[in-house]
Image 1 (cartoon, rainbow, N blue to C red):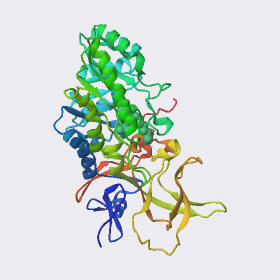
Image 2 (image 1 turned 135 degrees about the vertical axis):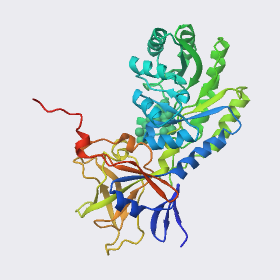
Image 3 (image 1 turned 180 degrees about the vertical axis):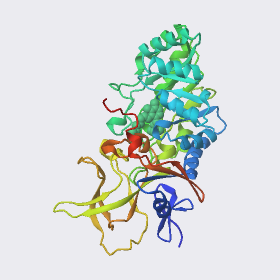
Image 4 (image 1 turned 90 degrees about the vertical axis):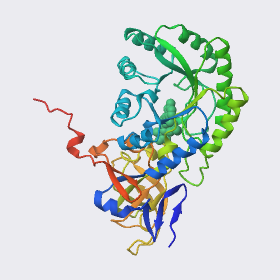
Length: 429
Ligand code: LLP
């Protein structure tokens, strides 16, 4: 039988009715390593990266993987070895880059609330750029750098005031957002930055939001950014790079139709060239689009529970493993790992829920499934913002992770034991 491909997931496919990640049969890894279990495809990661690399071919460009999407060390290794830098948002993420062998010179540090200790740590490590988000942060960074007899390389995050048309919690480029500085204040703030002794102004950046599936917000934001580049450079402040922030959305379902990264960048670069800035270094910080559809979460059905109004399919993964439905009402496709389940149950409409003691602990609503206890399900598009947002709520150890490379399945994270979840706690005397 030819492999049947799941939409958006070319490296996860059914062969003779059994779900595979590349050449590894999912039910076999799940039986060997237990569930819930995250499984990533290295080929899917590299092929997502390749779309951006094609988009920037022949350009001075740096792709900085936004590691908040998935900061597991082996995931970072794959992207570091492929030449990526990293967009970090904490001193902890910097330590992960260093542990994974990433190049700190290719690290950019984003975020509205960097502490003095984190600034010191990043300056000592020699990161490539601080993406500064307020005037107050510029002053503190300059002070920290002067005390270290250094000049911090900075870019200022500007809010282009463009509506990305995504979930409000992940829209960041509108007025009223806590991120960045206002577009109209940017020239004045750039002049202030250029006057500070501990700073070296090198770039400009923006980030309008995440899970954006339309082209227009990006094109509008680029126009707004290029206007600012012109006025900042007219004030005598040269900018080496333009950082365009996070990457594209992904297709969680066939309703989401994001453009391909190379096609979007063809249009964006045409704007950059038309304004005469084609020689500037370009940077981007994609997270979700590099790893989201490269990962799935395998979970076992514990019970089915028929109800008067709803049928529940209770699985062993929960909101602590897969927080996106509870936090953003996000949709993740849920599919069986075997197309012909061995039992006789007829397909029914289920709410797929986890064991956590909250009504918000649902993973999928109103899903037609033909399942019974012991069956395995795959929650799709679970590579990004799942493991990195996982918690120990209800003292649930975090799931194990497997990275598939062809026919090899590497364990990249052991299942967390309950003891590990409370190892830093201390009993009273
Ligand atoms: N750069 C900055 C400054 C960011 O804040 C983000 C994401 C990115 C880059 C990467 O954006 P991406 O390429 O992944 O769209 N937890 C939410 C998403 C939060 C995004 C936060 N910032 C979710 O699960 O949908």
